[in-house]
Image (cartoon, rainbow, N blue to C red; front, side, top):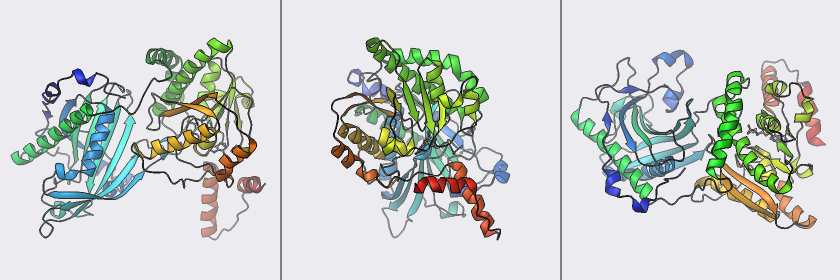
Amino acid sequence: MQDSKNDTTIDPNELFAQFSPSLYFDAPQKRGDTITATNDQADNVTTDSLSQAPCWYTLIEQDVPASSETFWKTVRRWTAEPHFVIPPVEKADIISSNTNDSDHAEISEDITLPFETVVRRLVPKRKSKDQVLTETVKYYEHFTEDSTYEGRVTYTPDIGSSTDSSLPFYYPKVLAYGFTYTTTTMDGDSGTLRLQILPLQSSDEPPTISDLKMRKALEAIIHKLFKWCIQARLGYKKKAHHDTLVPKEIYLDKYQEIKTKYADFFVRTWTEKTDPKKFVYEDLAIASYLICIWLMEEEKTKRKPTFVDLGCGNGLLTYLLNKEGYQGYGVDMADRRIWEKLCEGHNKSDMLRVEALYPSSVTYKADWIIGNHADELVPWFFVIPCCMHGLDGSRALPLANEEGGKYLAYTNYIRSIATQCGFDCEQDYLRIPSTKNIALIGRHRLRTIGQEQLHAIEAPGRGFTLRKTDREKEELRRLSNKNKNGNGNNNNNNYNKRARIETN
Ligand SMILES: C[S@@+](CC[C@H](N)C(=O)[O-])C[C@H]1O[C@@H](n2cnc3c(N)ncnc32)[C@H](O)[C@@H]1O
């Protein structure tokens, strides 16, 4: 994503003059979903009471000449510097900030989990008169069915179960408020901003805003956000360098071709718990990208490269690459329902194999090793880093909070391992519906390294422990429940089998 125009040729005043919001104060627009992005109160709403749950309403809408990256930069500033937005506030103390690495977790059916949650305390200027207020801030991003990108931030005041009387005067009288940024062109430089609220009282009637002062205040808020987005755009230094290894047009042509062949069928017949809109399109995009890289290689070698996909999960990527003529197989410690279908007409183990890998002791005869969001295997085989595991499989890496966040710090850590191993580690940003979209590619090895050096690099991974599969976890849960209920039969075959593997 980038603000593609050359901003030195753009008159900032022209951008600022585009402010002309659509106001829905008399008829707030209901947001499609009701419950996804709220606070503990709303999170606690049970399914039974969903119909009465409050829903989000859009009050103002404004097109903005800025990319999603500048939107996020602006939002982070908004969270860190509320005193520029709410004058009675002196500052915000950030109490905690947690990133959620599970955006690729296959167990999660909920693609609307926040990728980051910040708790901040608003400290007022007049300490003896005005109250301190704690707020939970959540950042979300996802792609909708029609491939529209939506970035979303919600601010939820901590008022427990009480009502607006416990909100300080400087705060809007809402259960939560937030902003969304939507765009249909991920690498374009424009989108739509929306100011949304979750009203205090749930009611069938939309929460109309009749108070003139309130209307002015809300309009001022979106104006400020709009201005900050433009300022961020003007001072923006591009961080995400897309298309560094594959020209955009070539990639998009290939993606179109692959999507036309496979997307419809797999989205319609998806048997996994995961969301096909995310997972199918992501694998189509990664397959297209890899094929583009491989086509360049084929020009030189005059043959199609072979591959092995480690931690292949649902196996779709392996299937697509095979279908496109690339010989290779996927390995994962847990098989998936969909494997049967993908392997129809083939010997299953030719394409998808169940195997729990101890990464320091495996070797493969293949031109390419793919590790697509492969969790614990990432530091050993790199490629598309995801959930910040160290070489020992744990998530206890002491990552510095670099500019660009923990994910960039993790990517740098993975790259440093690859570089120490002698690879010329290239980097590209993939056009996939995931926040973890950096690809690290080691096409060329600049030097080989000796055993001693290799051992030194691998040393932190000596305690590598194999994770439990979801099935094993489920069985353990059942066992523990049984034991709790006094039915203490812990003779579980699969788990025992696995325990043996672990101690071998
Ligand atoms: C987040 S999933 C990604 C799956 C797939 N590559 C994708 O992108 O959809 C990580 C996968 O790595 C597998 N995995 C993790 N550690 C493994 C190990 N030591 N041996 C084999 N598979 C492993 C898990 O079972 C899981 O399927």
